[in-house]
Image 1 (cartoon, rainbow, N blue to C red):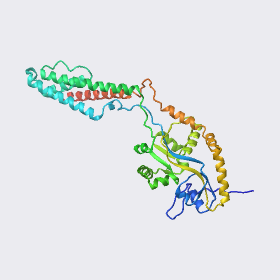
Image 2 (image 1 turned 90 degrees about the vertical axis):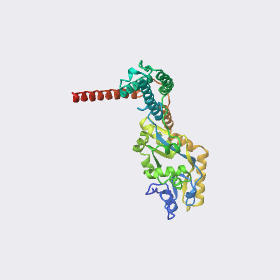
Image 3 (image 1 turned 180 degrees about the vertical axis):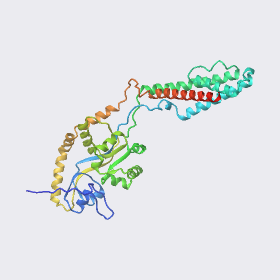
Image 4 (image 1 turned 180 degrees about the horizontal axis):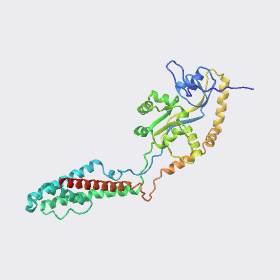
Length: 378
């Protein structure tokens, strides 16, 4: 009867090279010949191949990004954002310019108006221009021909402007806004509100450190500067997955691993609010790692068994059985991001009510100010 002892690396890492030529984690234990075989899905790499032996490939796996599903709904400024801020600024400036020119023309050409103060007449013209934006007409006080010509062109611009505004609102309210999903490393790097996390001591950390592409260098900088390198058991703990669901963090890990994690998560909670990025990256062979001191006939026997398992599709069947709830998790997540045409709720129109409340409070504050000024004058 043969007996085996199980050893776990103190640092709980897969293995990274050190400056002195040694390695961390399980690769280090194999390299120092403290153990014979590393149990686990090792990612094969050239650097690791220099110090350990690899078995035949069990599978090909790639890294994916998992994030939480963004909350749908329109913000308070969703209606205002129908126009860019430059358009709103242009409307305000144009309104004041038109009112100023109309005031000047009326003061010069109409004798009966000359007695009115310039300030009062200007405010009346501003109110008339503002009223026309809501299709209320310009007012009956426009008498001179130059003023009427000016008003005609103002109305023409108002028709175009408000038709565009109404059309944009109709389109916005008819279709639910699509959630902003993270489907690639570039998408993730553009989201300053999401902190990425990677598996510490793994092959991904090694490839990011070397920075073979600009995207990898940017990702490594963001991860390393924000303490985003965690041990696998810490990164996949429930409290970290909760942060991912909340949309503050993202996990970058192998696809087969995340299948297992989400399958268990769905089995426990019967719900899933995660999104898996559509663009996987850094594909690598998944192998067993063995010490170079292991006899050749043992290595050949292990490789023969691995090839038998792979060719008989047992790996696929085992993974499917372990991750049977993963499909339900993905279906639940996809169901949460479908865009349907539904009746508008209070959340969709919240900005309207906030606008009314703001107008009421502003009006009351002006009323209080007028009352206080009147009391002081008396």
